[in-house]
Amino acid sequence: MSTKKVKIGNISIGGGERVAVQSMITTLPKDEKSVKEILRLEKAGCDIVRFAVKDELDAKAIKLLKEKTNIPLVADIHFDYKLAIASIENGADKIRINPGNIGGDDKVKAVASCLKEHGVPVRVGANTGSIEKSFYAKYGSSAKALGESTLKNIQVLEKQGVENIVVSVKASNVPLMVESAEYIRSKIDYPLHLGVTEAGGGDMGVIKNSIGIGSLLLKGIGDTIRVSLSTDPVDEVAIGKNILRAVGLDKNFVDIIACPTCGRCEWNLMEFYKKVEDRVKDINKPIKVAVMGCVVNGPGEAKEADIGIAGGEKCVIFKKGEVIKIVEKEKIEEEFFKELDKCLK
Image (tube, rainbow, N blue to C red; front, side, top):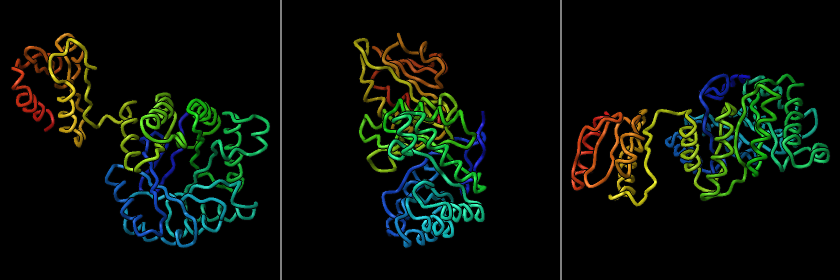
């Protein structure tokens, strides 16, 4: 089942559009550092930026952020429906709310009316900390509880005529996050935002996000992602882009395949790999490079590579599985990078 297309500022998600990468700035809109943070994320390749809105000054500051930046801006609001309205009126490209915590029907209706008037989309959903009490009592902390709580939030807005909706279901538990996303995806055709909330940092945070988001993307589930990490938001963007590359949704980069080292490796593969990585990190072309430990795993296993090298007493440089040069170890770097640069042009 394909999803609806939703326009957020100058990009669209869902409906066959590419999966967008999001992040969130660490400052509030009224903070003078916010423009700089957003521009850093833009430069890193972020598609959508979200920020917390805590008071009226934050909502009013969105107008300045719009003037100084180019990326779609999403206002994250809790508890105060007036801040949702003010954010929309000051230029937010999307808002994120939980209809259950911004007040009664009259307040939800006021936000819905403003959303429709300005043509602004809204993200709704639930995480394990915001499951409606009735669903938690009935289903516990489960995919069904998360899914049904989210469906209730969607229905609240649909009753007010809002259909420009993005949906999310998040959990810090990876299997629960995956199961919840699969559950809600079977019930709705709105674009789905993916993320493992409160994943932490370091290697485990990256692993949680990669498994949770990546496994769903491989099943065709997900229209926009945020890699939640306790680190610099720019790192979130880099990991998000790499997840898209790893699952085959972004092919416009230099893909380096390389051996895990073993006793057959007679040269410093790891050091050379790092040099290749540094050489191609900013190249946005669909090229595959192989750095192989020995001729056993060389041209044969890496025959699909546009260019590769396999070490040994002498090193071989190959293209598409065919050896083009045999070089002495001391000339590896000079000869290989000469051929690599030809491929990168």
